[in-house]
Amino acid sequence: MSQMKLIWNLILPVYLTKMIQRKSKAVVNGETDSGKAVGKRKLQLQGKWKGVDPVLFFKDESIINSIKIFYGIDESFPLDGHLISRNSDKNHVKRIYYVSKSVKDVLGLNFRVGQQLKIASVGLKMFERQTSREGTDTPCSFRISSEGLPVILPHITNQILYASPVDFKHLLQYKTIKFADFVDAEFGEKASKLMMGCCVIVMRDSKTMSGPIKVDESTIAIGCWKGRSNLSVMVTAIDCQEMLERLSFRMEAEKGSSAQENKLNVDELKLNGVTKVEESETIQLVADA
Image 1 (cartoon, rainbow, N blue to C red):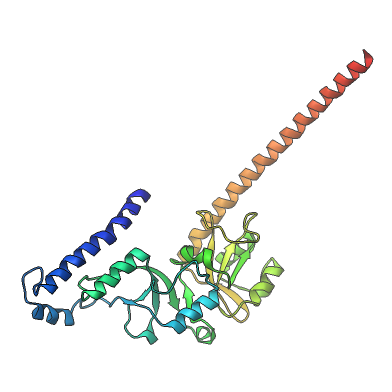
Image 2 (cartoon, rainbow, N blue to C red; image 1 turned 90 degrees about the vertical axis):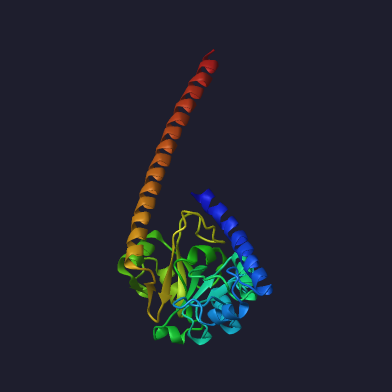
């Protein structure tokens, strides 16, 4: 399935590019694919795609820079030119989507030939505007969406904390926890020092105690909202339940692995003990001889 998806992602931009080029050639020659005059086609384009939001490159530098600074997004993850919105009024953009370079190139070509593709959905939802009262008081009014978090996670250097499995589980169970009520007091103190707004909580283990994040299929992270006195999860109740089940399965697997490792260590100690006894007996026999 993953191979088919990869092949489709490679073929789709090429197919769309060729289709746009064919349509653009017809417009240059004064006709559309159906042989109709350009003038009539332009008239249709003026009222085109009713009920479908426009696809626009998001270029508001003030918002983009605030997102970069707030989350500490490094240069290895380009935002400029890769963000799109579905609202022509930049002051009321609710969602910002991320597109890859190949999709970006197709969209750019589509703009140059008069937006002849009807695009109902495109991009990965990366940021959402926080409309709550607290959201208006933060340095960055956009939070990271659950869909975009796995993609951007390795590139975040600010507003990110590691939680113990116990505290992470409590967040999923109780949804909101005051800083003083975390089992790990040090984690609660660090959380209280974050800037108000969206933050990312990663469940830590022996491999993610410190240092850069290595994201793989086992990484568990959620978006939270850092308020004045607490942390609140920003995922749905269904997602919380799915994560709790995934967490329980992971903890059981680690528990079984730890028990097996302890058994191997005990067996190794016993074996070493027998070996030492045999060596001692051998030395004694030699001495007697």
